[in-house]
Image 1 (tube, rainbow, N blue to C red):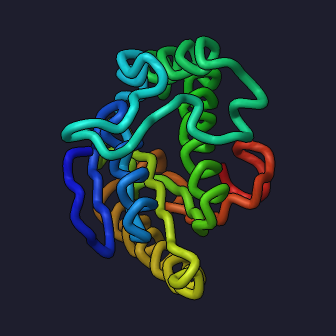
Image 2: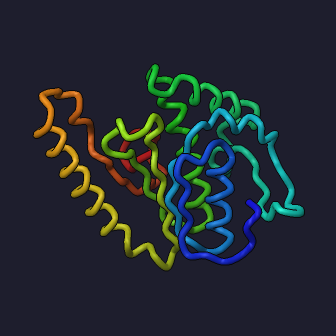
Length: 193
């Protein structure tokens, strides 16, 4: 949040809580694409809502990030959702769905700013406890979407083939990293998260 210079691509791997939002916001401010691997969404609770720009902080954050999510829930409801997602993701379907909704809000915010967004999961999922990946392409780089989809599918296929060749465990052949353009479809349904 402190960096005020220009850049072309933002990378944020396992950026806890607001760090993912700040990385995305700075990318949008600079007209840069981004790749985020968000984690610990329960730490959003510490954000307390809007933070005005000031010394060392050039981006104001509010939660929910997107207008679409603000129409669906209040700040307090969103924070409760984030807390539940952090503690229950991977434990129960409702926790995983809550995490998907938080990432859907981030993707929706970028789309509202004109970015093309893709969402997926790291492969193999054993690579990390939190495997979500968000990609934002500037309008001028939207033409790269198909290439990113192809590369993600090929990479996932190679990973699955490797895992299947080195283990007898069928559970290791988890679904591929599927980068899907979020077209505003229902979370988890057609159109990605």
